[in-house]
Length: 322
Ligand code: NAD
Image (cartoon, rainbow, N blue to C red; front, side, top):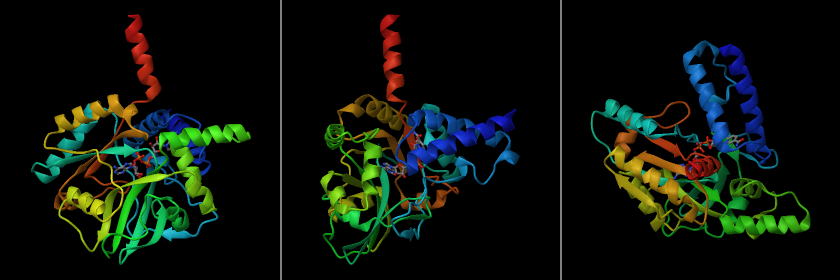
């Protein structure tokens, strides 16, 4: 019974992965995908003998497309573990306390719904931009990255830096793009994330330049100017001239993190870009190091995923009719 369901889930998720990551045409809502992946993971945890290397639970992200040369990430671009409710966040905090035996500071950032990129600057000059791909190997999209106006070609200081961030399409640009496509009879993009992904993979950087992509940077991998904490590094990234998101909060207690997640769940629609959750990271780099990584994700971070937008309106409808 479990074996059959596992096979069924793997097949379904592989199909959804292909449509999402390779064709940029999702077949289902992210929350539906996440629920099926969670079910698969729980079944595999119960029956570890049934885990196969081709299972979607064993992979990070998408595939490398043809048309761009391949970049090997010196430091893999991992995924994030997910939290779907308050209990998952409390479990995250408990795991951390159990490992470290001391308190931590949690940095909360918006989880921008775009596409992960990794940029390399040498002596302050942009030399490479890459997609995440399967986490180990991505696509070299340097020319397209250079076509995004908000990304500096030269930093404020001549540092060597590898920095990670999210390229996204603002809601206004997305609406405009789809309107133009409708007028031309071209197929529409499903959402801003898919529009950003489709744009970043254009072989002609002029098309990228015309579509108003933007980016926020949220992680330093290597730098000749490394700080002691994640917050300090975010500050340095900002000072170097890279765009960073202004909504960053720091908390000592997981209960405050939970309230912050709830607040943004309610207020997400006020932002000019889409977010699909909140990313919570342990601030101290020393503590991050002690917590380390699983094969797929860091143990010092978690992505709290908002419930699907549609589900919220259903809840509201029910409340109104009661
Ligand atoms: P993820 O989206 O759960 O989280 C990791 C990513 O978050 C990072 O790679 C980074 O790009 C992003 N991110 C945004 N803001 C960040 C910040 N401030 N700090 C750190 N990271 C930040 O992980 P994933 O492996 O990219 O998961 C795949 C996602 O794709 C899931 O959301 C899933 O629902 C979706 N998906 C959907 C379908 C579908 O058919 N709808 C299919 C496959 C995957």
